[in-house]
Structures are given as structure tokens and as C-alpha cells.
Image 1 (tube, rainbow, N blue to C red):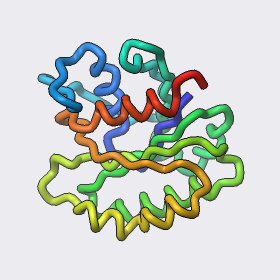
Image 2 (cartoon, rainbow, N blue to C red):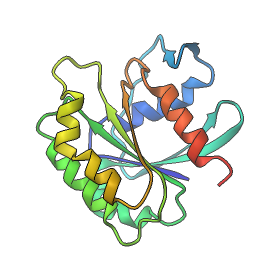
Image 3 (spheres, one colour):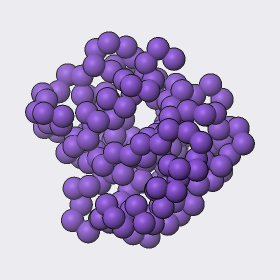
Image 4 (cartoon, rainbow, N blue to C red):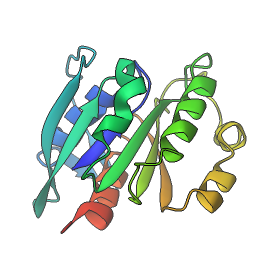
Length: 177
């Protein structure tokens, strides 16, 4: 099971819906093209979804609502991967998202599993730039000192940009585990 967490309103639910749609969607290069924008409601509690990865195997994604942040650590047992989603267009929330991420990565009961930092909402004009995000999150230090594999991907759950990169990460890190 791959755990999907992040603050409230960052787009976790839409991202998971896009991952579900990806296996049947038309593909252009490494991006998927989606013609519709599915409706979503904020996740209250937890949601389990099976996602087919390149029609080869399924991965169960467990999404935890952002309001559950204080108890995320109770869901770390038996996970094989962790996706942490951040809304890079929400300038008021990014600092808190960084603190939450550091809290998660320093949790004693977090297994040594691969981590994917998903920087969502790249389609929004007033988003943080790549260099601003790297500086705010001190990504090079996280990668160096975290004790686990940490990768990052830029995504727009609205347009589908980056969904293929997440599927590739799931294939490389969550297959056969």
C-alpha cells in the first residue's frame, strides 16, 4: 500500500482520480490528456483506491484527509511507499506543508520506504517557482539526510501533466512489494 498524504485542499483526491483514469486515457509523450474535470469533495477520514500501473499490476493507494495530519503516523505500518502532495500555488500553506513533511520524515515509526514529493498545481499562474520550492523545502538537505529515497515530481492534477511520472514512480518503487 502506498500512503498519499498532504495538507487539506492540495489536490490529493483529484490526483488519485487522474491516476485511476490514466490507464484508459489517451497519452501524448509522458503526459496524459484528460477531457473532463471530475468533481471531488474533500476526503474526510481515509479512502482506499486500487490503481492499475501500466496494466501490469495494481497498487493500493490510501489517501488520508489533510485534517488527519496529527494521526497520519498511525497509518505508517505496512506501507511500501509514501506520496506527499503540496499545493505550490497556495503561498500561505506551503510553509506549514514543509513543517508537516519534516514531521512525517522524522517520525520514528515511518518505515524506510521511497518517498515521492508531488508538487501539484503547476498550471496556476501565481505558483512558487522550482527554485523557490527547493529553497523553502531545503530539498537537497532532505534528500541527503532523510535516510530514504526521495524523489520529486511537478504535477497538475487538473490537466494531467505529470501523472505519467507518478505512474512510473509507482512502477519502479511499488511493484512486487
